[in-house]
Image (tube, rainbow, N blue to C red; front, top):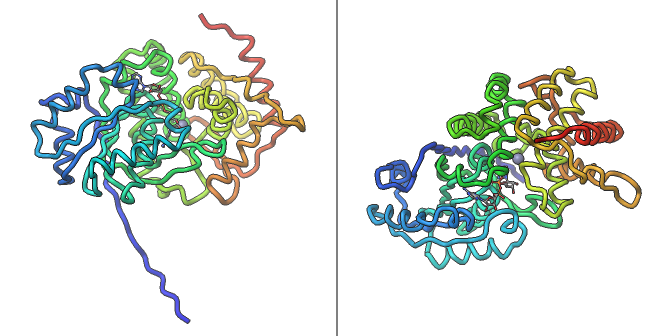
Length: 385
Ligand SMILES: NC(=O)c1ccc[n+]([C@@H]2O[C@H](COP(=O)([O-])OP(=O)(O)OC[C@H]3O[C@@H](n4cnc5c(N)ncnc54)[C@H](O)[C@@H]3O)[C@@H](O)[C@H]2O)c1
Ligand SMILES: [Zn+2]
């Protein structure tokens, strides 16, 4: 008998760019990146809502590639938003397009769209030929300030969020700020929740910056919105690159603060409640829990709730109160699913203070219930103009 343990070190370059008008002939960012990889072919996939909001985009992209020494295989438009993650047929559709365009592992799939679109197209790209190169162009606040720089992709299955997926570092992420400004106001504002989240778990100074800029942020003033998006994306990317666990092999998921309840509420509402507003509620719940469990000072909740109110984000959703046959809150199943998704011991990040997280391994469901009661009462007693 014999046993041999080999170490297989693998490193990735995570290229993250912030720019504007990425497909203007004067903008060299994309061309430089494609040249760096030396690939032969490129296929462009666009979120339908983006194509509608930017009617000249297809012509602009085609014009851009005319000047490059690369085999341009055209532009395909597919639905975006949660529907693309809900049905496996869209992954199959992207596989077919990759196959009929003869993309190989040295070719590029460019995906232009919101977080859901990037998740589904990214999953297809990461599994076709065991991975063709993916260049992400996130087009929403949330996808630019969080998911675009992430190294995972997934679609939903078995009534559970992100059940089928892969870890795959994109070849590059090109954040074109221009895209941000065609989202509807609600989506543009709600996506800031991931910036609030990463500030809360990683960077007290950034949280103070958000507090200080709350009015221009809530008014979605472009320069402040863009700065917030960039700072948030960089904090996420730094954590992934330097946090020691890019592919989440351990039990801790600090970037998923507030997400156990959020993911469950999304699934419970059949994804009618979108990710960003669900995270706002989940983050409010876990903030309050942190305080009521005696982990954090009361001032933490006051500051977080002030920011959420300033951003006009709801801190309660009726799905928190939906019960199963035994009278138990269904959202609590989210804790088990959260643990099961990762394996190992239940580990939920709570807060000790702004910028200071703490892993807890047991959640008191009675206290969660009391926090939900408090959130409901708070929400009912507040009115927005
Ligand atoms: N992979 C990860 O690491 C990760 C991290 C966080 C979130 N996510 C996922 O991201 C998804 C949420 O992403 P999202 O908040 O970007 O929402 P989304 O992708 O659902 O986009 C919201 C809506 O806006 C449209 N849209 C996109 N860009 C637009 C633009 N520039 N102008 C006009 N309309 C536009 C979309 O078609 C969609 O209808 C969730 O499924 C979530 O699970 C993934
Ligand atoms: Zn999230």
